[in-house]
Length: 326
View: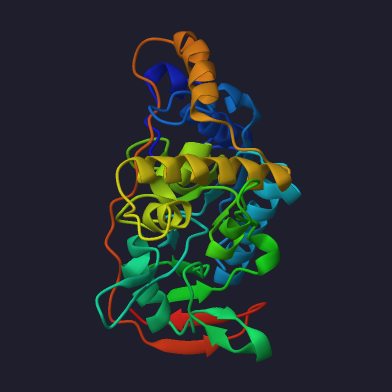
């Protein structure tokens, strides 16, 4: 998240060169209010801002990011949260929570193809991969939560496994099709963007982890249905179609509708109904005319390549801490 403050906005940043916690919270909220994307910005004043500047111990940073997820999910009562980090801290994950992608021998991908490179880095850092199954054995699967990958002061990459208590996930079911639950589809509760910065000036910037909430269509149409991601529609269409029928055309459209219904139903049962796109667009169009004209803060992601050549070194932190020399 890059925030370029207009001259009028910088008037709020009085006092010392380093912004106070109050100024930091103000800037993060204004940035969200004036973002080009994000149709939940009507509630920008309610953004919960956490200040972790000055925290450079990797264990403490990882603990702070895990706490971000707890504050954001609150057992299903989703709230928007921004955690501002020290400039020395770099998060390599694109989101705090994401699923691994494993390249298979036949060229296919088990899991999320978007995270092939990140998964390779995590494995090189010593992350074992997989989820515990019967007997505690780890078995790679399509929805393995990736560890947090952190680097402080340009040092080695350190991987921290997130405790299951900190990652709120929803198993997808459909009210009209009992077989849907057997597909094993699931998704995490909040999108927590991690590869962004909050810029006060050209020389003063802070890494930011920002989480809002999903619109149902984002999960159905982008995360699970995209052919370059989980490509779940053909599988659902085959279950819907008569035996021997091909899963294409109208069948795929029906599969998309059923997937959308399953997401609304499952998240609703978990107490966190994701808004529909039409409902959010209505709110957005009510909000948009309130924006003031002229240059305002904007969001821009960090553009940095992943490090390579990692080797593993063990260390202890909560569930697991792993290091990668880069």
